[in-house]
Amino acid sequence: MKATQKGLSIEGVQGHNRQVILKALHDLGTCSRKDISVVSGLDQATITRAIGSLLKDGIVEEVGLAKSDRGRRSINLDFTTKGRHILCLRLQRRSFSIAVFNLRGESIEPMEYTIQRGQSAAQTFADIAVAIDQRIADLGQVDGIGIAVPGPFLERDERVILITESPEWQGFEFIAELRSRNPDIPIFSTHDAKAAGLTEWRHVAHKTDARVLLYVSAGQGIGSALIVGGEIYRGALGLAGELGHMSINFDGVQCKCGNTGCLELYASRIVLMRAIRERAAKSNDTNLTGEATFAEVVEAYATGDELVTHEVSKVARYLAQGISNCINFSNPDLIVIGDEYAEFGEPFLNIIKKWVEKAVLPSVYSSIKIELSNSAEDTVLKGAFLEVFSQTYLGSRREPQQNKII
Ligand SMILES: [Zn+2]
Image (cartoon, rainbow, N blue to C red; front, side):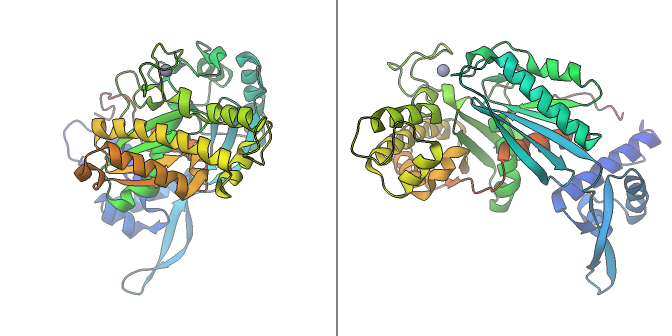
């Protein structure tokens, strides 16, 4: 878009330039005005003027000197780490987490809170609201709140349709409720696997030249996200990627979604833990007890515990079936498996690869990289941040809309 384009107001052009500059800074990280000029195609004078206002608004800050190519020194820029924050909430079946991010996407003191078994959705919501109020009070101001929830989540209507094992969330309009409690703060919600997929795209995909990333979230629930050229594929209702409700056995267990043999009923962490605990309570094949924690299971798997190896291998086989179905449907070139199951490491990944290799055509298999997420941070919370950031600072719109600048 050029300044001379018919129908553009000066404010519109300036707003557009500002977003282009922020996007360049977001993609490049710490960099000089010249770097931004090269990436954005805007001339230096325009950039200097726009950055002047961004500095004044406390969105970016100058961060020391960088050596330019001719040996001259120039001042680097980055987003400010002070004053402006985005608060993110991740809801899971047995816990919720809250993290505060600065505009560089660095999280400050993420905290996890346990949801007691059998606790009502209303009580959990009350706990969430108190925790959020507390964080907002500590910060003084937040620029936006991002919420990531398990699926099936109707992103279009911001409605949780079903969380297996936590049916009380069904129909509970907690996002609208949060919005009415915080009317002055923009709130954006997203499906957890899509949020994590977005983070993985930013971390991994652009470094590997991947075009289609299938992100598989495997933990308390099973979900996935398809990211095509950096954009999340959402589907008509924002429901795309419900891998957990893809059947791997039509003669299988009845799922609350209506289908039978849904992958999540065989492969979620909740199901895995139940199976391990039940068997451990009456077996000599393990050092674990009927009270084993997930951390203990991960450790037992690493040390070759027979019972745990058997159960985790079964889950890997089920996941591989779901992933193979996704490969045949969506033809990804990169698959990243994340969330809690990534802690099982390479042996787990190798079982999945073995079964996927058997299930798909050789030429297809050889074109795909399958990896475990190796992110040290919570990719769901980070993805919730990325969503809020891109919608509040970069002018992204989830739904295609008329360009308001024109
Ligand atoms: Zn289902």
